[in-house]
Length: 359
Image (cartoon, rainbow, N blue to C red):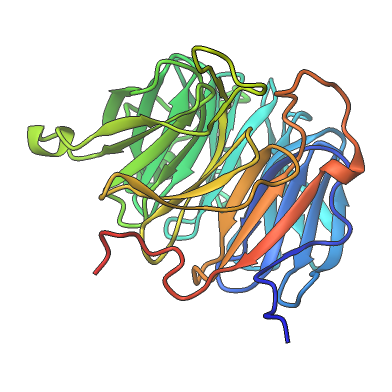
């Protein structure tokens, strides 16, 4: 008798490129955002998964996140709107609108804050549920476009197009934004607040993804040039001496050349394991790798997927890994075929995501 496969592909995937994948915090429900103008809700507790519902938008959806519970989600994308989705009643509510597409959205259950980051060089901060005293979201202006966002229990981390990183304290952000009120006849509630850290990015080229580790002590970032950087928030010389960057998601040219030439792929996705603190990376080369950031080594790489890896997510208990693949156009060809868009869910064996440094 053959052993059961640890991985299965979801039926009824999106019909265009995948932009984000998010597991529910305490179950095996999965949200998927796509360029086909839909947010998909799946139940992946059984092999093959089940499409529960899809929620149509006016334009491609670039990001999605869970809300206070599994009955609500938030989405954002090229229609410029921050939307609340009632997953039970299949209704959508526009909470605010930016003046350009919204790249990222994230919800902090610890502070009941919803944060959206837009290419209009602002973030909107919503208190959720909104109070009658703060009907408008707080707008914070950024020095350049945000390319990626990550939330922890205490921090908001933004990676900007200028290759700078901004770190905000969520508790301070919550207090100050709740006290902020717009000036009379002003449609914007602008808050002038300084991040508690401004950092120079460790990567030379455009940031594709950024993620804070589960211990809230540091983060990983990735770029279009096949590199990942690992850094710590502690500004002490001892901690900063531990930061490093490395090459990855590079494949030998085919046919081989003399001297050897590597094809460099973007690292599109990063996700930390919630228990072990290791992290997964997904690249334009179609590979997913697991890394031990403390031991500074790759300890696992999975088989090549049929398309570029666009998004990754670990389940809340760390026992499952979801992989979204879709054409990244690294091969120069245009157009998306349905057969090249897919979502794979992998059940992780005991210790499969545990790094070599773990005891």
